[in-house]
Image (tube, rainbow, N blue to C red; front, top):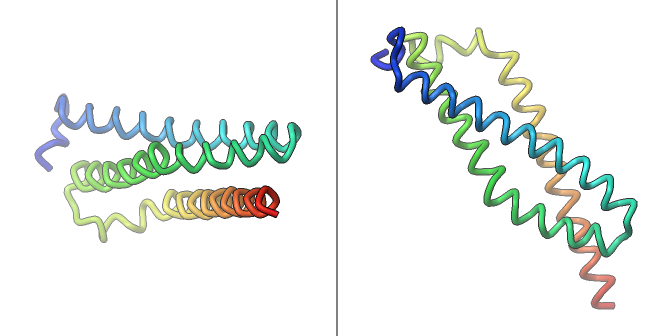
Length: 126
């Protein structure tokens, strides 16, 4: 509870970084969906290239930002409430459901891009 003092600069910086990571994560997901729609219209070679780019971006930006977001969320939850995280689960269950839903949709996007890359490679090879 040391960071949750009113006027604490460390707590405010952690919260600002948490919000920034959430914007990066959600904004990237929205932009990726828009670019996927455009790539589908452009043709299969464009989709294959884009799928490889998304794989690169996902492993270097989306995964680290989402992990840091969750870790910072737990730190902020612990510091602001002063209670153990298990005591706070009931209060944040809607946000956890939203994160699980988002994680499922990201998993579907990753599966889709992997499938596209595999099909493109098989078409190129055959």
